[in-house]
Image (cartoon, rainbow, N blue to C red):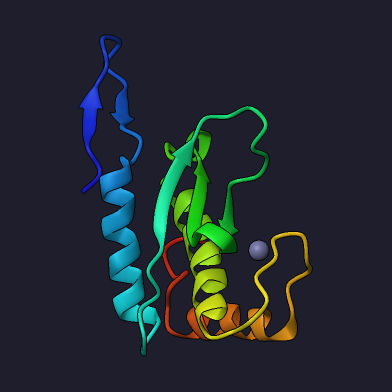
Length: 124
Ligand SMILES: [Zn+2]
């Protein structure tokens, strides 16, 4: 899935993940870690300098935003994607998903559930 190439100075370079690859990853995560109804969520990568942080879930648009700058750091991207997918799935189950609000105990329980399932095994 990740492409590697050698640059002109013989450094091994890992190419950033494309939106297509990120979407495929999200579908894998959805299947593996979120049983039950599947929320209709789109993923968009942004290079806006106004976008801070690694990712954000926009409940009104049911959209996961990811910062382009993290797409070249695969583990960081996966952690951000899992985080936003927890928001998206909780939103689909009727929880408040306002990005300006703090993470409720149910969110933290979801992080622990995913951790127990091994979602972060090779990422942390
Ligand atoms: Zn969050």
